[in-house]
Length: 215
Image 1 (cartoon, one colour):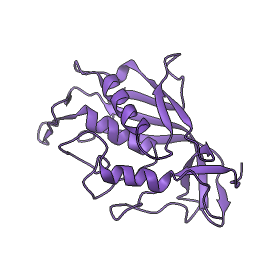
Image 2: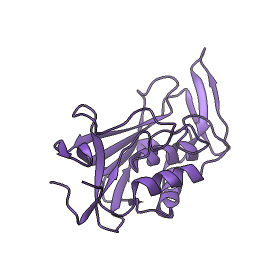
Image 3: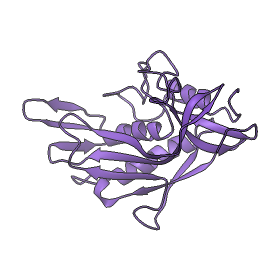
Image 4: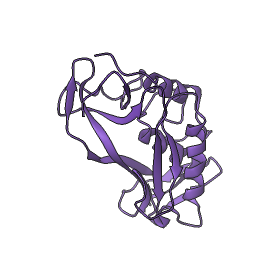
């Protein structure tokens, strides 16, 4: 499918501000990723949350749905996102727990299913993201809390983190936000908050303008 004047596209920029780690679209090896959206409209993403996301007496499902509320209320044309319950793979976004993320990794987001690489003069190279997957570390050495508490002991590989902040951060990646060096949820690592900050919202507004990109 080619970009047209009646469609808008959400775009995965890793450097919408100075804290980025790269720029997409310059080559076929690093294309931008897009969710397809109607003009001046927020699309809806359905997300499955596997039982494996909850661990150590902690409800990551609750944290994820709290993050959904933050993004659904953001003043931008980013997608609405809701938990679906018709099966373990009922949506275009999948949240689950993993024992294999490794020491020091809280969670990770990937886009394992992508459309064909497209090209337009205004965007460069891009692909449609058709499925995003978010994995939370559920190994025995990982503990989650709702206390904004973060600690890490490299010698024993034991650590803990606030699940609400991590769930919101990873959902930000689903929304196409990259990392930032500003004080924000999308800043990597420990932060004394778990809700979207002004820089996070500015990123959403920069990406989700409701209009199609220039060509």
